[in-house]
Every structure is written in structure tokens, then in C-alpha cells.
Amino acid sequence: MPHFRRAALEHCGAWDPHNVTEDADLGFRLWRAGFRIGTISRPTLEDAPTDASIWLRQRTRWIKGWIQTWIVNTRLGALRPRRMPLAGVLIMHTLLAGTVICSLLFPLTLALIAGVAVWTAFTGEIPLALRWLTAIDLANIALAFGVHAALGLRAVEPAERWRTVRVLPMLPVYWLLMSVAGWRALLQYFRNPFLWEKTPHAPHDPNGVKHRF
Image (cartoon, rainbow, N blue to C red; front, side, top):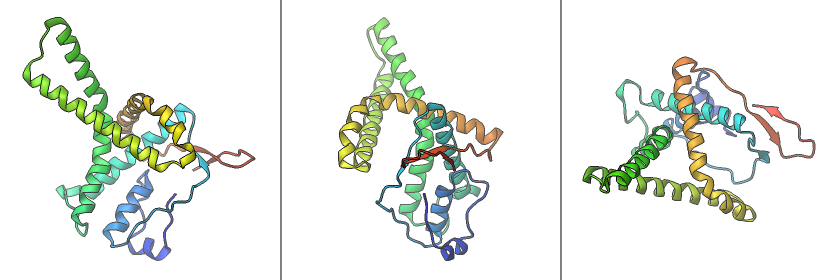
């Protein structure tokens, strides 16, 4: 949940009302205007979606918003937007474009690895080009899973880390679901770019009343 001073919001021209991931749009907008952005370490006391269909719609909206934010910030061929430092540019491309591309290509990468395995089973050998490509794909997957796991363990409270460790083997399934959300977001971007699929959240309180944001 983003928090900001009204003066800063007015200075940078507010956020794009058509962008379905307003925090990503506003974060880069504020950064380009020279403001600093920090993270509040206190918990939000809000439960994440536990229903697969709700989770899928939320991730679809997020990825679609990242596509919108990346395109807006790099329009007219400006791979380095004005007033954004080089570090910010690299973070923008890695966080926005990199995440979207990874979500789209992950199942294709698995299909390539599976295809090479089948080829090897029938022929007994792997062409050199496929051997290198498979090795690069496996290294990328291992690195990505490692980074994802490390960030996840760092973000949770110490008391919750053991529960997180127990579900880490499910990361490949999670990434496949992210791929479904990624392709869904790409189709929505062209067919219904401004659709905002609301996410019901369950506040962490005794009443358990759900709100829609």
C-alpha cells in the first residue's frame, strides 16, 4: 500500500488513472521527479489471496500494469527515460520488462528442456548448440529460483521462515501459474487494457470482513 505526501503527488502530476498498477506507475513517476522512495517495515496486517482464481486475477492485473508502466516510461524509443539515473533505468527494465518476459518464457524454457531430454532418449546424443542452450536455461532457472527463495525468506518474519522453506519445492508450480497470469495479462493488454479486476482482501482481524480494493 503506497503512502505519499500530497505535495509530492501534485508535483509529479499524480498517477495515470488508466494504469491498473498505480503503485508501479507512481513509484517511477516520483523517482523521475527526484523524490526518494522507501519501504515501511511494519506489516500491513492484510492476508494475501488464498483462492487460486482471485490470485490469478490479481497477478494478471499486476503484470498488465507493469507492461503499461514499462511502455509509458520507454515510449518513443527512449530506453533511458529523461531525468532517470542509470541505476534507475536498469532497475526499471529488470523489474518491469524482465519480470514480464520471464513469466512469458518460463513454460517455453521447460518445453525446450523436455524436448532435449526426449531427443537424447531417442538418439543418445545432444547437438552442441542444444547442449549449450539447455545448460544456460537450467542455470537461469536455478539462479532465478535461488533469488526468489532468498527474497521470500528475507521478507517473512523469522517465525514464519520454516513454513516458507516447506513450500519452496512448489516454486516451479508457482512460476507456471505466473506464466498463465503473464499470458493472460498480455492478451488483456491488447483486448481490454483498462480492465481493473478487483481483488477481495481479508483483513487480519477477528471479524474477517472482506473488502475490495
